[in-house]
Image (cartoon, rainbow, N blue to C red; front, top):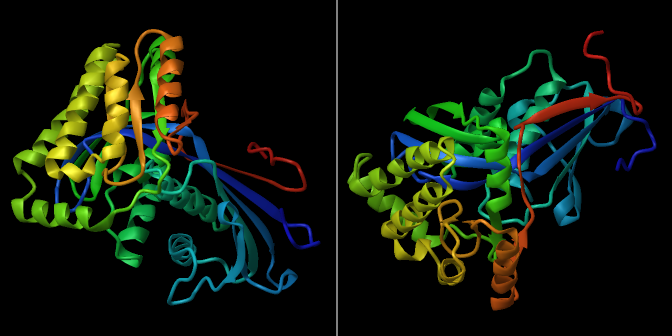
Length: 359
């Protein structure tokens, strides 16, 4: 909610889904060179809201409200360095706030920080998409995903694959062919409603209760893969799981989809055993005993984060499994999810009214 008593001229809204079940992850990177990735966009989504004022209506040009952290502070959109939330501030800097505007930007996500579900990428996509509405011309979702990735790797000098940004931009279920880093084609996997509903019913997202940490393990894996080259057997083992998942879903074969998830998780462990943590192994063992069809450690793996489970035929068995997992460790928590029909969505309103797009 705005701190100012001045009414905004316009309010821009945007939302973007997070990502789970990323088969072929690690192959969407610069050191892989080329890759194949299957992933699923889900809600809860990230929310961004931008209140737009005349420049002289507010004492500061840009106020950023990171709602999850309870932090509201002024930033300089043309600053050469970044403060409390570098990713947000770098995105705002890149998008060049018009000189005649003052902004109050609110950002919120129901997904826990460090959940390994591409939340930071979803934040970037939603924020950049909303900021894109401040000037004439509109970028495509694919272009916005590209900018979100560029902000991480060029402005912030971070390691980042491309799949999370693309999943947030497109939503739904995707097969991504990265033919040469960072360029990729995205093929939405379109399935009949009963298959969609059944997949949604079977999936469970388990948060391990600790924020994901990239740590020294990831740096070690990256160094080894860089030395091994893009066509090394360990990367190729990961690439193969994406078309397996795609084909299984088109066939409505959930056992085959689960098997692809299992193969991918073991291929992650083959990069380094610590990428599938002891907590993740504990959940996997509980799921295996309960008859789950598959499991995928989300993201790159490592300590903390989350795991996606593909459950069996009966919903009551899924609920029993979740209860057993949550009882095994007070930190483990099931996060409710729904498959996203849409990716990035952007709209605006003025004084409670949505403009007629035909006008």
